[in-house]
Image (cartoon, rainbow, N blue to C red):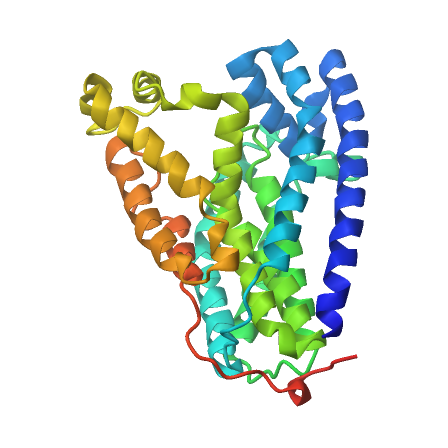
Length: 358
């Protein structure tokens, strides 16, 4: 029960630290926006560049102060959900280990594609922009050999988690998982260094960080492994919730305007897009259903079986986005990641002897 007692304190520390960090970042980014040097922040530069193109510089600057309040809202929601989470279904250890291995199998499938894309971007090194804050020590495109070495190390660590006979009484799986996330963060930063944000790996990268947290909780507080697994799932459904929150903050009720489909068709002229653009009722229903689906995704924290709805609607959503807007595809990481939102069946409690409890 020590884990449950510590979670409120962890939430409070994370909420305060995140608020302070966002407040400092806001001031720095605003100064960089005024000076025109925001591109040196890599991901943030790309994010702001997108907002500037859509809203204008002044509107993008006005958007920055809302980020820290969004964080507070998210932390309050997380505390409420954590306090109301049900522990009625504690999955057994073998089922959890099987799911961890499957997650890294999925990751292994996409590493070759990532390395191939990095090889292409390396040839266009002149357009390199330092990712995140690494511009302080990484001023140009890294050598191709370094990228390939990082990719091979990423592949090797992932393969170990898939093939090795590890037990969760060791801290090693959590540390290796965290190392894998750091490698992915580095390579994805290079991948997006051309000034264009690609969302294809968003759920995979997000879930990877929460996987490390899940494995740590499973090792430190084995009796709370079910809650840790729920946290890992939040790294996936949270991507959908953040997407809905962004729509609300930027568009509000205007998101439900069927005329939005005409704008979408201008940028993503898919096979059936023009039909939706010319039929306002189906267009409005489609936009509303997407918003509802994404906003309701946090219900999975309190009700694990809500994952069945999220998975079913999510698959339809991504396939429809592919057919209507020609964005993504049946092979998208998003569709595979949805499968981890299915609840883990079984009611066996994990014995405290399987890991450390102090």
